[in-house]
Image 1 (cartoon, rainbow, N blue to C red):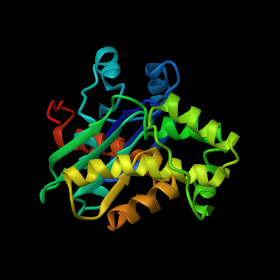
Image 2: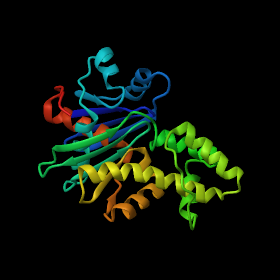
Image 3: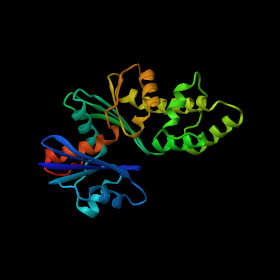
Length: 256
């Protein structure tokens, strides 16, 4: 059986196809102003027996393509367990939200917390802060890691934080030190969620922000616990959706 999982995130759309339990195809594209069209473009020419959607825009597919959906929490739990069977703690930082998930020994969600009220501490926040300092997203974590000290960032509101960054640099603060301060503020917000739902255990780090080496390093330092980043951390939710399609035959699951 050939099944597909589609994760429509706020910034990117991800597609995974599995056959005989093995991933045979992955695709990724920008969500853009039209998530439904972006999803259709990603699915073009792809053969599968059944598909399940998850993510920020999953209900668009349910409405327009009659596609079963599952929650992001469920999808990330399934995807993380498949990649790392002993996984008990998941941190997903995407474009617009942060999720901390605790799994039981069976790999099922036992607790979760989610920050989706604003973009603070997410991929979008990083993009804006990098631009405010004149860095590309690739340069930003490297600059932060090069700093010997950091400038404290007091606000996590995107608008106020951007103003604070501009003010610090205008006063002569070194850009790498401001960059490190921003990364530390993001990590503090994320580890607070993790400490509440899972005070111990290795962290499986997923989502686009997991590609940021500085965030990964600082999370491990802050928690004093190992952090595992899968080879393609943005595909975990799509993989989980594809696995659910295989397990359920494409039936929807309304549980978290």
